[in-house]
Length: 261
Image (cartoon, helix red, strand yellow):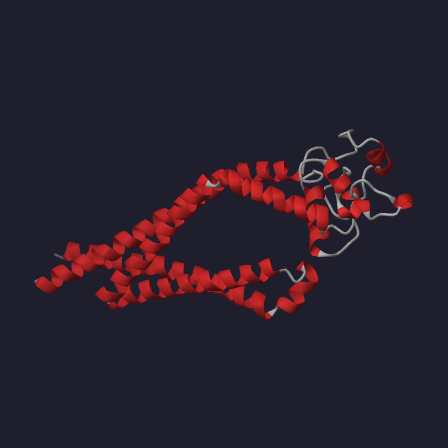
């Protein structure tokens, strides 16, 4: 009997610790989202008045609030040994787990379509929204940054720039066929000048002075290299959630047996 009581108490406090961590993660997401919304005026100067940015902040608040509530519910249910709270906690955790599975399946099923949408979006911003190598708007700054960091040029290659609004609207005397951020650099830093900008523009097919390859494939390759880490983290989170569900249902069953006795 003492052994059973010890196991029960161990399970109770493990469930409490699990939910405390879950609650803290929700609080962190909630805090970041609220901070972004409150301080959005200062962010506009950095990233621009982008609706996706603000929408992302509200999504953070929503997800954080939900996780915060679920974690709090689990903590209270474990400490107070509330059957009702633990059952509700189990149901909510099961819904989150199911949503993660559905999201993973949909991401796999629509992977090709998603890649095409992302490629089209990149090409659209390149063609219509880019303002120049020294422009400070979010789109131009992002393109310059990505091309330098990933050592790439354009969505599929430097020829993408030839039909862009930025190139077409330049004066004949100052025409540049692609941004200087396409040129190779000694170090991957926005502060560094190109190795040889003259040679870069004179022979854009020379990989010594020109970033070869499009940015979409370079970014896709970088993501694929990290996909194993992402998968491991996802599996670890799923395993922790399964443990949380197992602990909660075991506590409920134990309480029911004690009530019958």
